[in-house]
Amino acid sequence: MTMLLEVAGVQYGNFSYASCEIRLDALSNTFEFIATPKRGEPLPFKGGDSCKIIVNGNTVLTGYIEVIDIAYSATQHEIHILGRDKTGDLLDSNLDQLSDTRAQITLKQLIELVIENIGANLEVVDRAAPPSFTETTDLFAVEPGTNAFAFIEKYARKRQVLLTSNGAGDVVIEKGNPQKAAGSVQNIIGATDNNVISANFTYDTTGRYNLYKFASQLNITLLNELGITDIDELVAQSGGTEDNDIRAGRQLVLISESPYSNEENGPRAQWERNIRRARGLKYSVTVPGYGVDSRDPKSDLWQINRLYQVIDDYVGKSEPMLCNRVLFELSVDKGEVTTLGFVDETTYLLDLTKPTTSESADLVV
Image (tube, rainbow, N blue to C red; front, side, top):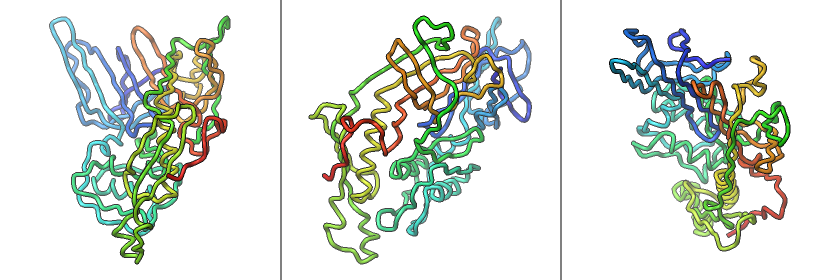
């Protein structure tokens, strides 16, 4: 069981600290390594080098070393290494002129056009297969200088999907439909087989609302070209939803990021509600090792977008929960541990399974 940094085919270990964070709700994953080399030993790699992070023999991140910070004195010599996976280029780059795309196009195709525009070496894996965009509501013209990720993430929200990455550094279009997985988090009072080292539970309603409303209009340019000029068909497109877990009197009204129809505003409001619920209800736990069974070096690694059974008497949890964050960590003090972030299993779903007393039907506003 180990965490390694691989550069140019050579694997490096024996770090005083190492971490690799994988998130479901973030495009680019990150890593950090700290080493104390022998005095006079040259640095074997440099900033900008491509690399892989390997945990228990599994490649969990493919990206680049972005920062190398060297500090030394007469008695100490420390190297601090930071980086991200390949999708970090999408987060940092701005778009040049992108031609209007008016025919039906998928989100995968749109992201591929953006990747081509910035000249990145990235593949796109579509695990969600959201519906294609339509001529009446979508015009993909972009101003030069627009951030590449901000542009595509706007349309990902429109289709209620997540943009994340995999171990190969690909862009992954993911839906919140997690698979049940073997393994559990357990902290039962009096039990001898608990695997929780520490935990934190937060329930915060300050960012949540009882009523969510989205307002927009259809794309006037395209509709005019199609011969649709009725004002009622162009403007005042709206939709909403409720969260009856939150008291009445808390209302959020937002303007949609791009042209939305009445039919699209309702799901967009649901998505906003679900994301805010996820941010407000968090359970984080640290367990030994990197695999779901810390005693077995061949055990499957903990993974995002999986449902794991959580039983924690101290916070009153006994239910499957969705893992949306995995932090593999190695340190002199802690040894090999994994910190897992959990949210409600329905967080990224529109077809919610919570009781009807907690959720109401979509609103037409």
